[in-house]
Length: 402
Ligand SMILES: *Cc1c(COP(=O)(O)O)cnc(C)c1O
Image (cartoon, rainbow, N blue to C red; front, top):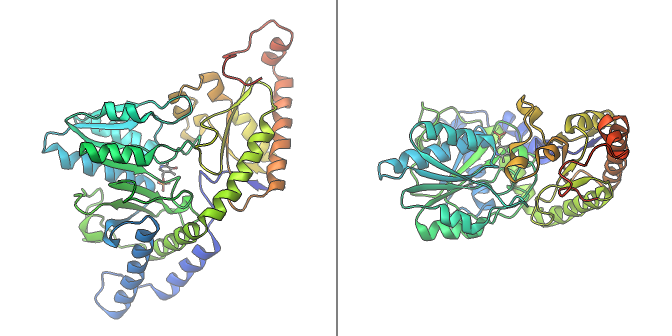
């Protein structure tokens, strides 16, 4: 059986998005900046896409939507714009979480080198930040709070409306990396008091290499790509109309079907969680309820996440491991350690991210094979043998459910 359970890394292109992409390649191949008819027809298609995206997140105006090359670029532009824009007013302080995506963390590190001061807040042990800590971190000279909507590794959903309210009251800009939330959770930028928001097409069944920065009117964006006057002068480069239109179609499809999709995927997630609970010395990471509909992140004592992942791959199950083998380092995930998961548990973690194309049969297959590979690795491990014959103590015993 083949089971794709790595939707947080990327999703497949939906049929709707694919059809839109092909239609644009054939029908809207002009340069939207050209004044002739071909260009203008393409411009109209781009306008339609902008209006669709604006509507899906309840932006007040389509011109608050800027198309980028993806979530990373949107994150970079949001932070750099807020920081540089407010520096002149003497604001040099930024607030974020230590469990953010590297597109945020590395941009923050760059701004620190430019003289900004950054507070990296740690979430509670369930992966969710305490709103009071956000409030307390805001100072007179705070330019921006950037807190992700939902975490890509362990799925915890942050209290975005509460944080938005605090930022509004204190007159501080609020950006959220909503790459994992867009198309999966309801987003209303006005009701949630979000000033800037990042999205990425390929995380909701659109194409890769295309994303969105929402910036409320009145916010001065700083270019990260200089050149022509596309995107109202804020993002140079001939616009990728097929990818943008396909992304908008995917977002609309996901938004229109959100309630049904959420309850379906949540049921699959909870079935998987239930099925893994009886594995001794293992633990679900992240809040069990306030988490992305499809996310299951689980740690197992005495095994390496990478070994489990590669073994599951041989059974046709595609997932990801919590240790950062993806970032080509052997460090455990900064997200898991950042929320206080012990290093030993972070090393032995797996992430399954389910979506609408998964079904119960696939989930049951994952449950069966995870039991199988965990038992197999433990049986081969001298570490586990020592535990069994009592010559060694369990590491971090308080962390595991037994
Ligand atoms: C995937 C992801 C990004 C990066 O988006 P790209 O479009 O791949 O650049 C940023 N933030 C989060 C939370 C993500 O999951």
